[in-house]
Amino acid sequence: MFKILKRLYLEVGFVQDWLVHFAAAAGYIGLMKLISPLSSVFGFWPLIIGTFLIDLIDHPLYVYLTNRHKETSVQTRKLIDSGQFIEGIKFWSENHKKENRLIIHSVLGQPVLALIVFYLSFNKLTTPLFYLFLGMFLHTLVDQTLDLKRMRHLRHWFFWPLPSRIE
Image: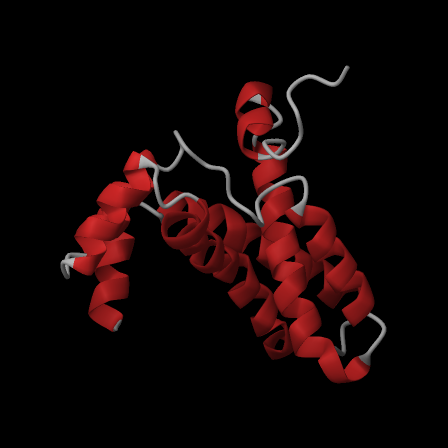
């Protein structure tokens, strides 16, 4: 498992994306430590996991369920199913910007995450789940904020479920 993660880290090029999301999570943790210095930093691990977990859920959903017929999905599945896992992930990471109608990374998925975070925030027993979903929500906010400079790209991946013209 460690070898696969190391190859993904070195060869595929997730480094910049992961660093941006990790920095956002670390910034949130730092802010919470300023507000509540007695809180444990280790209690925030689900937040960091959530910022990365969203991609590990949403992208396979795209490839295997929602957009199986797209050329990028077909090629990615062929590589992964033939045992070329790293090559499949590499192919996907190089080509997924062209076709990204992801379910959770959308104008419909973000409010659902916000509602889940809001609901979980009222229950002390679900604190790890709260931070997990907060990390996912934070991830979508970071992606959205980074794409404010490229509004056309933001419209393509974030607002895809909405009609392009409202009459």
